[in-house]
Length: 211
Image (tube, rainbow, N blue to C red; front, side, top):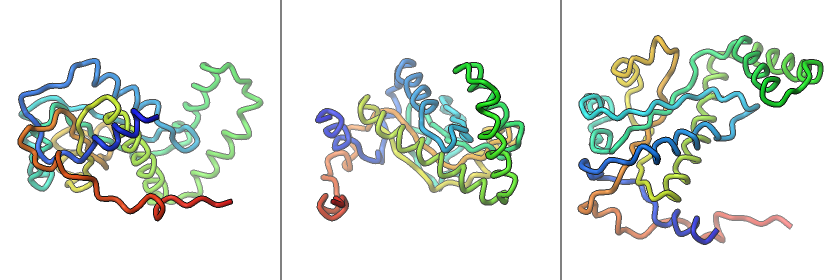
């Protein structure tokens, strides 16, 4: 636990990456696995991760990222997307996986499946989209912690133009909407922010114990 806490102190939102240093494939695969293991509501995983490692494409995305150079200089750019559609077929596919992996009887799963299908049928598209975005933030938090523990530098980003990313990365045919960015790599030795002390409220103010 102490090592994990020290890693969280080490982590910061990198302002300047070293463009010449590339993360090993093994580290990237670890991040992909961590993303896939992220907890999501109902276990439905309405999120997808696009891993970009192409400097020309990364550079072309800068204008849709409000000029944030980290998008291009990072070793890899992680783009967290949400599924644009949550259909009854999507939900049924999830329960099919449950049966295949756990061997759970259909009669046991049927009431839960029926309830989920009915629940989502009553939700508006905006409700479903907001729900999916919440799951994307769960994944982002998970990735940030894994990055810190693995000493992978990162910079979470909300500020970008989704339409630009969707066009350049050809996400439309995949029915995916980009909602969060996470450039990852190695901090530059000239990034002065790496030496700044963390600014947080006192833990006694942010953490409350109810007895």
